[in-house]
Amino acid sequence: MTGNAEVKVRIQDLSKAFHTNGHEIRVLEHIDLDVREGELVCILGPSGCGKSTLLNIVGGFLPASSGDVAIDGLPVRRPDPRRIFVFQERGVFPWLTVEGNIGFGISGLPATERAARIAHYVRLVGLEGFENAYPQELSGGMKQRVEVARALAVNPDVLYLDEPFGALDSITRLVMRSELLRIWQTERKTILFVTHDIEESCQLADRIVVLSARPGSIRRVVEVDLPHPRDLSSPRYLALRDSILEEIGLAHRI
Amino acid sequence: MTDGNRKSEIGNRDEGAPPLPVGPRLVESILLPVGTAAVLIAFWHAAVRLSHTDVFPSPLSVLRGVGELARKGVLARYIADSLLRVGAGYSLALVLGIPLGIALGWYSTAARAVNPVIQLLRPISPLAWIPVAIVLFGVTNVAAIFLIFLASFFTIVVAAMNGVRNVPGMYLAAGRNFGLSVPALFSRVIFPAALPRVLTGLRVALGVAWLVVVAAEMIAVNSGLGYLVIDSRNAGKRYDLVIAAMLLIGLIGLVLNTLVRQVERLRAVRWGFNAP
Ligand SMILES: Nc1ncnc2c1ncn2[C@@H]1O[C@H](COP(=O)(O)OP(=O)(O)O)[C@@H](O)[C@H]1O
Ligand SMILES: [Mg+2]
Image (cartoon, rainbow over the protein chains, first blue to last red):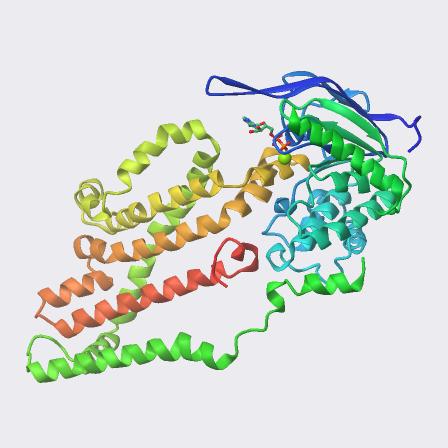
């Protein structure tokens, strides 16, 4: 990734605390991060460190306690169709077919254009033949594809993915990662990808943002200058993985 | 994406499973219950014969009673009258209950205000409302319809309220993320997400409405299957007609329930039911 691309997402001194029956839970502290246009950034950290909270704030679903989030220089106040949040496959609407789900966000388009857009994304995620299937008739991996296609169909600039492959079996998860990379390379979206899986972040990211345990703050930002497709047995990949493993290991010992 | 992986995922689809062979399914769903009914009727027939009762009718005399009602032309009219009353009271409960339930499910403050009242009124049997219905509407058709309305209204309100309350936050977040206005969020996310629960409530409410039509017709009107039960008893102790009316009530209730169950099979709501 070239260093001089435009900054797409700017997070400045962001903190978040929850107040539940008199207690204050500090979840995020002083997060500063710039994500460049077209970049794939992984936010990596142990469970409960505030990754989902961070992504929800950036997505406009939650207010920050202090600090700012801006996209294209404008502050984020609410969710926006230009930035789509992809949940684990559970966000797919079970009352709609694959087609209905993928076309959900483009109901304002003329019918023919909408149908063409749906067909395009059905093909992109490899669901030809399942256009009229309902989610309950699909495997977890297929549902996840539906959700990614539904997000892409509105042609957003940014995708937020919160442990999107966490519920999948390990083989499907690997397939989905390479699918995501292929889609990212053709569609050139800015992607914020939350995961607690070190391998996953090393396979996908341009940069890995390592968060500490709660209250989450940025421990380290790792530039990954390995070209895709990545050789998962190369010494450079293994060195990268081990350095992060060490970082997280330390994080656990503190 | 390789073809090999696609195939393995296709294998997980429910639709991939072959349908049950016709033979066992037919036996289980039709022949078994029909057989049970036949055994019970035979038992009934034998019991009437062996006990030499003059009061309790045999299956055959009940059947003759149904024929007599049909010939006199009251059978179709009574069935239609009962169905119309249920149709009127139930439709009213549906038209008022679903929007109210959805609103209460969405506005939690309103629910906190209203829900205790609903929970207080709900356990009161519709039969206890009979005196109130008569005071309000006299011994009229309207009183009967009012009782049926009450019998189904609370069930429908509570089902719609719980349906909306239990819509997963993720669906709402996704709907908002795609830029839906509040009305669009209701029609495109909240309503379809709540629909399976609402339908279950509608089915239960219809069952209760049909239960109550009989009681309502016993006091408030002079037509319908409930009226037939009480009238046959009072006018000449015609127990063959009493039993005939009872069986017709059961049969129509079964048909109504089966019809509503068909709605639950529609693909857009089937996800919400455990049924295969
Ligand atoms: N709405 C909330 N109210 C109170 N506490 C919350 C809320 N959401 C999250 N938390 C707490 O914040 C912490 C971080 O949660 P989360 O962002 O989901 O972590 P992660 O995604 O990294 O596993 C957890 O301890 C969680 O219990
Ligand atoms: Mg999380």
